[in-house]
Length: 437
Image (cartoon, rainbow, N blue to C red):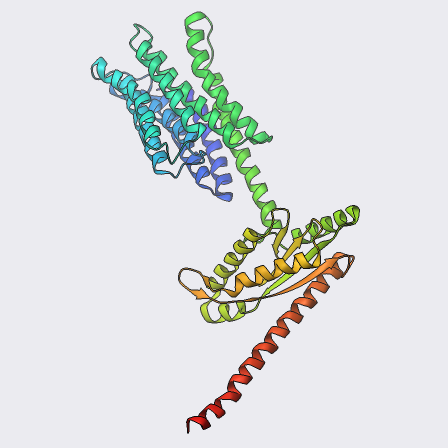
């Protein structure tokens, strides 16, 4: 038994526990895949215990360790691609997982004639290229083509060197692992192009991990007298694990910042962020001597929807309204949810009263139409209040008060019209009855 690997097993187990704890607090599909990958890396280290044994157990340890490490690399590489849920991506991932595992099994066991290993090597190029060409109309990303090019180069290398006497299988194994973890570094570079410690450590760690499979064979061939401890070659693994933990923590911090400033139901800025943007908009208008407008929009029949159809449908209404408003205003404007059924819109860039009232009228008309929510169709309507800086107010609080007042005036006016219309219909009923007699 290879007892020297026990410290590595203990270290990777501690890192795995830390990773699992961090991933549990910030759950995501990528984090779940990373966790599975690190479980495979732990299995890779455990299998190292069997390597010195003769016969079946030694071959089993070699096979499991190689399949585990190459499968972990494939999971890491495909966990953060932007088109992972596409059917062609699922076919690609399944194919590469299968081909890599098959090739490592053939190398570790040495079973089968030479043409079987050649066929497996050819699959590295033929499979990804065929899937890419078949799905070209739906998926045409640079990362997909990078994967194809890497695997074509790998297939050529394997077909040339895998049957070389003496060290052919050793070179082939390292070539597969080099391409795998180089691909991880490339994919993480495209996915995390940000200047953070987590991104840098993870990308550099994967690059160092890939370089191990070039430096180790090179040293053994050119300088066989130099002995490097196995623990040195394992350092990049720990660097990648640390980098991934940092990435999860960074994403968690960003998520907390977003939740602190945005409404969790609609994703719009909440009142806190709205007030910050209002202050900035007012300062910009004062500095440039321009106008700005504030729209306050209240949903008229939202309470009735909640009372009759339930809060779940009410949440769907709020999400639909948020989507409608966000699609209709300019990117430079701010739409926020500032109350239970109240939305506010900040319009900048010299917005005068006519323009602001036109925007408000458009948004109100959009909500006059029935909203199709799939399971229900509701009609809610809205009341809009408009206030202009600096004509109506010169500070944020006064501007909000002015917009609120006009919104309630519009609501009361609409309610009075509805009451008058209802009363007129009721008063006309006796006359109609007498004429019918």
